[in-house]
Length: 307
Image (cartoon, rainbow, N blue to C red):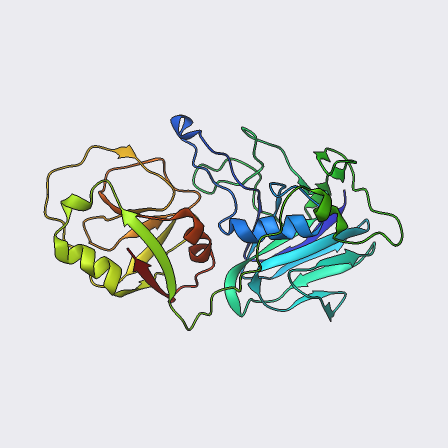
């Protein structure tokens, strides 16, 4: 045991970079919705980029550290405190035994990512410790009183199961990242809730099921993120799209970022925990590098597609 969950907040999940290639078993890729932020946090504390961390929705999380460690917080922007004192985001921070880490409500973005030196030690399924909210596989959402273990950093910065191992006095908190053979990703500001998020799209396999005006509406109007959105999909509100082919479409494989259009004409962008098949036409696919922004979009935020 290295960390005790005092308060889990609205929803805190164990996530890594996900499990790819298991759609045949009915499993989505899952993993962090904002992969760039999790990678950054991990590399700042000397972890491999794919190590498991915590995805914290809307803050509210309170953790007590039993053992000393080094942590980094990336993603959403808000006030995060250690024993009541605000700590910087996107930097490695040393944590003493008994210290309490608190996450305030984010001012920008929606999800914080916390990396702990050594990574969160959680059971793996098909190579990943990610929680999948659709299938219910992976670690359960954090609850009050839960105890989290961490891995320890080997000489080559790989992770092995066990208790936390902390660098000696004077060791640079983030220096392990320099030995990871990884380049730190650029620090990307969380999206301003008052501004539209722009996401690039490519035409999907069923774009020809819609009239030309629908494609123009898709890429010219501002859509609004519905409060019904979650890790499975980003539901959008706007002027509906018009489907010209009305025959039934047999279920077919769905990919991350697929922009599926149900009979309402209001599209949903499939996110990390999406179903692996679907029976509604896919008019477009959001480019993978822009999905991180959708993972930080807040309900009511405007979203603009560029195609």
